[in-house]
Picture 1: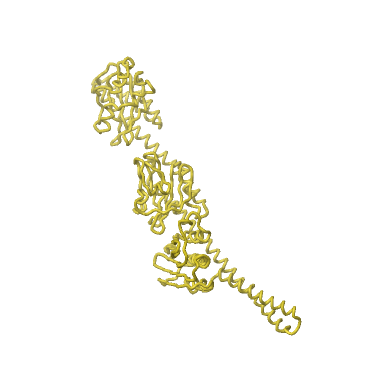
Picture 2: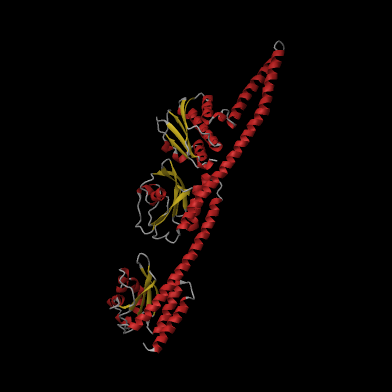
Length: 546
C-alpha cells in the first residue's frame, strides 16, 4: 500500500475516532460518523442497521440514499431483508465483505424505480461489534461500483470496529444513566411506602406507588398464608384494587417458582403467557414479567409480581434493584409490625393502669356506698318506708354498678391471664355460659405481646360463638412449638357460607386478622352451612425470643 494512501487512511480513522468520542447520543453519533465516513472515503451512499436481541432490524442512520430507497418514507429499507441481514442473523457474517447484489435495489427496480437507483446496484457490508458483542451492520455503496478492494474493506473494517466500540460505550453510559434514574425512583417509592402508617393499608398503597412511580402496566402483591398464596392487591393500567383471593403455591408460573425457590424470576420474551389461575384473579396476559420474592430473614413470605405486554420490559433492571424493591417492602412490613407492637404494649399498660385505678378507687367507693346503704337500711327498717325503699334501691344500683365495673376491669386486665392464656379464655367463656373444652400442647410461656393478641382474638371468637353459633359448646386448642404459637377455636354450631363473607368481613373478623398480621402471623376462617366453624391463628415466635 503506498505511503500516501496509508497516511490518508490513518488520518480518516483519527477524524472518525475523535468524532465518536464527542457525544453520548446514539442517533447523533451514528448519523455524524456515517457522513464523515462517506466524506473521507468518497463513497456516495451509506446506511446503518441495528439489530436487537430478537434480531429485529431497524435502519437507524442513512446518508446519500438514492430516491428509490428514499421513496415512501424509506419503505424499501423497512421491507424485505437483504442478504447481509440474513447472513448476520445466521451468524455467518464476521468481517467486511462485498455483497453480490443489493436485494433492496432489486426490490425498488421491481417497483418500477430503476431510474431512481442512480446506478447503485451493489454494496459492501461489515458487522458492527466490540469484542463478543454484536450490534448491527454498516453498509456503503457507490454508483457503478460492484466490487470493493481489499484495502477499502480493511478501512471499513477498522471504522466499523470503532463504531462498535462507541456503540458499546454509549450503551454502557446510557445503562448507567438509566440505572441511576431507576435508583432515584426507587428511593422515592421507598420513602412513600415507609410513610404508610397502617399495616392493613400497606398492600394496596404500595402496589399503587410502585406502579405509578415506574409506570409499569401491572403490579400485584401475594402473601403466603395457610399453605396458599393470597393476592392482597393489584395495580393495572393506573387502577388499583384490593383483593383477598387465594392461589395454590404450584402452577402459577414465575410466581410459584419465585416463592418456592426464594429467588428473582425474569420472563423476557414470551408470547402473551396465559395462566388460567392468574387470569381468574385479574392478572392480564403478559410477554415479560418479574417475580420478586418478599424475604424476611432469608425465608420467602410472598411475591411482588410485575408484568407487561411488551417483550423485554424488565431486562434493563438489575437484579440488585429488583431484590432491593422487594426487601424494602418487607422491611416496611416489619417496621409497621414493631410500631404496632409498641402501640399495643402502650395500650396494654394503659389498660392495666386503668384497671388498677378503677379497682383501687371507684370500686372501693361504690362498695362503701353499698355497705353504708345496707347499714342505713338496717337502722331504719322500722321507720319511714319511703326512706327504706330508697336505700334498698341505692344498694341494688350499687351492686349492679359493682358487677359492671368488675366486668369492665376483667376485660381491661383479664383475671386469670397470669395463670395462662387457656385458663383465662375458659373463664371468659364460662362467664357467658359456654362450656369450654380446652387442649394444650407445649408448656413454654408465651411472649407478652403474643399472649395479649391471642387473648383478644380468642375473646372475639368466643363472643361470636355466643352470639351466632347457636351452641353452648366450644373447643379451644393452644399449641406452643419452638417456632410458633397456634390458637384454634372451634364450635359445632350452625355454621355459615364463608364465600359469601369474603367481600365483606365483619369488623370482629377483620380485627382478628389484623391482630395476627401485626405480629407477622396468619389468620384463617373455615366454615360452611351446618358445618363446624374453625378459627385458626398462627404467630411466629422467632422475632420475640430473647
